[in-house]
Image 1 (cartoon, rainbow, N blue to C red):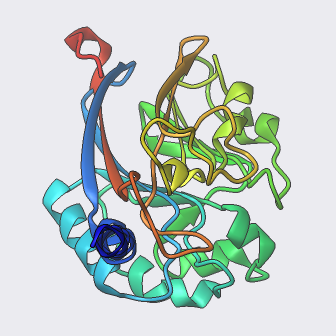
Image 2: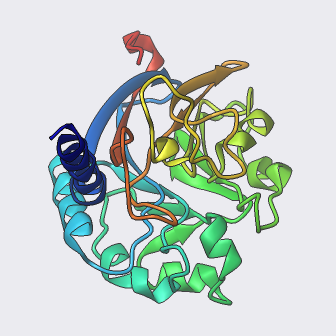
Length: 262
């Protein structure tokens, strides 16, 4: 009887990790003060690993519509493990925001490039930043770094166009790239770690790919710059999540005079 009880318990945990948690998207909301003229809300997506417009993607689109962000930013790994870029088209084509949709490449995009990634994203209404920067708004610039695992990252080029003293948002996939932006941006956003993807209480997260040994999930700060590492949306290698729910992170940046902190 005890053996059967243990078997049923393990079966229940497996069912939860395969069918429940991977589709149970959590919306996390954050606030911080930045040198901007007026508030701006960003929706941060990462590690979608999508192969089409499935149940999880449709749920995410509904959640995004409710948040009504000013801009959507994507920090890589939109394609699925061993997937093809064109499989993302059905989902990405649905993304809309007043200040646009911005993206950087992750390790899976860099491993299997389309041959003309900027044109591919442009056809979907998305601005891909590869070691370059651009104004998100007159008072906020966004700098995007190429993937550091299979790509060719150049932090100096990514920041070269930013006007001196300008509030800057840095986007990159692997969170271990944060030190090169510390002190050079107000906010940095990354993913890649999936929050560990599989977490057992009391034990260190072990499902960690190269590039996220020092920053796994949540907030970090160095030299006045803040980094948020999202748990992401999809799964990698195995289609499971346990103790690391998929996450849609919503960032509200308020003018510094408001004295609102995360």
